[in-house]
Image 1 (cartoon, rainbow, N blue to C red):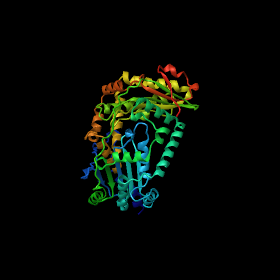
Image 2 (cartoon, one colour):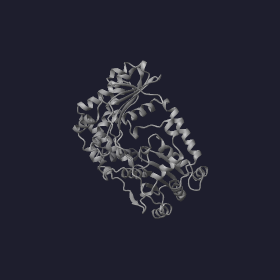
Image 3 (cartoon, rainbow, N blue to C red):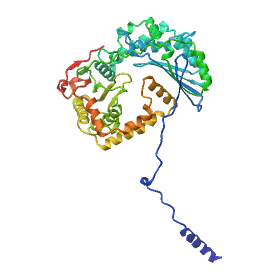
Length: 470
């Protein structure tokens, strides 16, 4: 017995020793995975007989429905002398009552069912949003129909919206960034609707009849685009839409898009304010969606200032010198007209001129020297890899496809986006930088305490123009 007691552990050790060695885990660089594949989700598109365009996607995961709607009724259609009409129209369309409902009753109808119905105005469109539980879908669609077909534009709600807009004008110079952005837009689009800003006089000139005329001009079924996603039955939804909108007729108004023809001279726009830091904005006209250089411009801008800590502006101004918390650049790709190129940051007053010269220098280097292969690789990979995150939410997918069609993007814009980014070369980046970056000819806006600047604004070689107070 004692002998067995000693032999048993020895036998176990021999048994373990005879086992084949466990396989080693491969090193990270030895791992291989099949290539990721991604396809842009398909969206159903159809038209109602009266011209309403529908974009549909069922999703029964949650008992919710979301609706996005668009009409060609943006601020670019504001009459001269009545800038702000589209914004007031959007506000009072929602707040001013609809159908048989007074403003308070309409609000109560939506609130008691937790229905979110919103309106807003953009440069080219009136945008509407509807979010609700699926069991209340018919109630929400009826409210949307009443608002679009039978708005009341209550006079008291109009006056309330006007007072709120006037108060916003009174306070808008409290924010240096607001001053800078407004000034830059006016400088880039002189005499054009895109460059106009609301004033006390323009808001005071708007009447209820102006809202009604704006509505009669633009609110027609052939101009209405609807994107609907969520927990609904397709056939029932189509039947409900035909019931609510089927007898609504009328031709869509032609969308007013006056061309941008002005080529303003470069200037330095200066607002002298007793604040401890300076808001700096460079700007010039950029490109629209139809420009064949769009993809090369996106890559170039990522390297310049659109890539966060991977961009040259951020690295030079913040990381290397600690002169600003954030520094950036971007192209607003114009959907119908050329958008703006903007580069900007905020820095303490005593480093204003230094930062301006550094930013100008980085733009000049983009024009004069080719970017490195590593910069190009990182920019393209980042843009391509981030593309898929635009498709995480099913309603975002539908709304995005609707917007692309509304503005006339190429039918293969989404499907071909990654391949076109991947095709950009080092020479393409330099070519578009030379074509679209003109650091010595840009508008420059400064909002800050001039007496504390580290130099005179006139030393920058631009005519200095004072930004007038409202």
